[in-house]
Image (cartoon, rainbow, N blue to C red):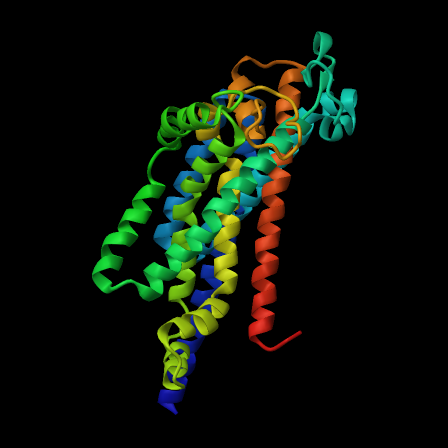
Length: 363
């Protein structure tokens, strides 16, 4: 009986302690939310007193970490998630607001104008703005980069993950990852001095810069991303699946082709889409290599034409001197790039979801 009473008392004290902890954590979260709200309000009005709620926030977090560590950690992770989504929403809103002036003047012609006046960018007196030539340039360089990077990247990932001896893998994999750390301006300078010069001298291209050379270098830049992500996907295929295939009499290549690659196809697809996103958003290498001449190639798929400009290069090349409608048009280019990258992200998620269904045997 005494032991039962003692256990009952301990249980009651534990419940009381848990209740006090929950009340303290709730008060802590309310205080943190108050500091954040006041801090953002003062920041947006440009007040010099913004430092006070920031100091209060840091002090509250330090106190909470000492007294209610688990609850504080949950609150901080939730706060970082909300902050990430909030920053993304603010970026979208900012881009759309800055695009409105040029959109009011040009309407959908800003994105779909295909006529060829003397100037498609600025026009006479700055009255004609069209992103269509840059959208075409972005599409051409992205397609070329994908044709270069996708097959080579997937082949490299298969070799590193499945075929290479251990010693070769230990040398090749760090080298591929090292390629991802090379600055893009370095790739651009190599492309300008070697690739562009070679194409101009040997193939008599109209200008020293063209979409083919830029796409080729951007594709090489995208290789490390595709190889690394695809190799990780191939490495996650269970060893039991490979061993079962080998036990049935398949060769190593047949196992790789019929078991490993299909099982890792969602990861390989995601790797290719990430590489395409890298190619689409590349700025410095393309800025250095292209001729910055706005217009449509004739025919439209002529990647060696004298025209050369993409959405990223026009933003980087002209952003420093732009103002008014010119700046608004550059922000419109940013909106188009954002939509393109979002489409790639959604596509990668859809591919992953579809492959999971297929592996489960669902239609």
